Image 1 (cartoon, rainbow, N blue to C red):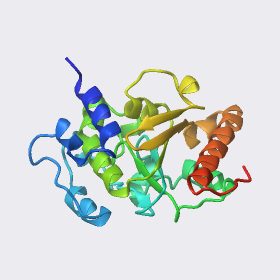
Image 2: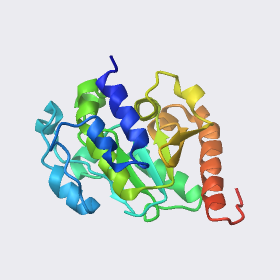
Image 3: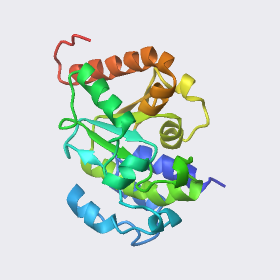
Length: 223
C-alpha cells in the first residue's frame, strides 16, 4: 500500500496540471479552495492539525510575489523565522538574498515557502506526520502561484517533494518534472554556511536556474 507521504508527494507533482489532485490526499472539506494567497493565509494561519501548531510563536506562511515565476521551497522555519513569521530572515536568509542578487533577482520577484509552516523544536527534522499535515497547504500555495520553476532547497525539501531517499549530492544538478513546472534541487543556504565547499555547486545550480528563466522568456542570458 502506498504511504501517505508518497501519495501526497505524487499529488503535489500533479497539482499544476490538475486542480482535483488535492483530493488524492485530503479528506472531504479538509482543504478549501482559496481565490488568493491572502485568502489562503486567513484560512490556515490558525492551523493546529499537528502538535507544532500549539508550540509555534508565529505561523510562517510564505512571502514574495504571488505571481512569481520561481518558487523556492525550504524545509521549515527556524528560530528567527518563528519569531518574525517570515521565511528565511536569519543568517541563512541573508545568504539567500545574496544568492538571489548574484543572479539578478530579489524577493519581490520570487516566492519563498517551506514544507512546514511552524518551527519544529530545536530545529529538528520534520516528522512524517508534520509534513503530512502541512503538505496540503503547500500544494494550495503552488496551485495559486503556478510558477514555471520550483527550486527545492536542501535535502529534506527535495526528498519530500520528489518522494525519494536519494542523497542531495545526487539530486542536485538535474531538472525534474513537477507537474507543469520544472524543479531544480540545490543546497539549503544553512548548509552552505556550515559547509562553504558546497558554494561552488550551489552557484552552478543557481546559474542554471537563471538560464532556464531567461530561456523561458526567449532572451539571452549572461549566465
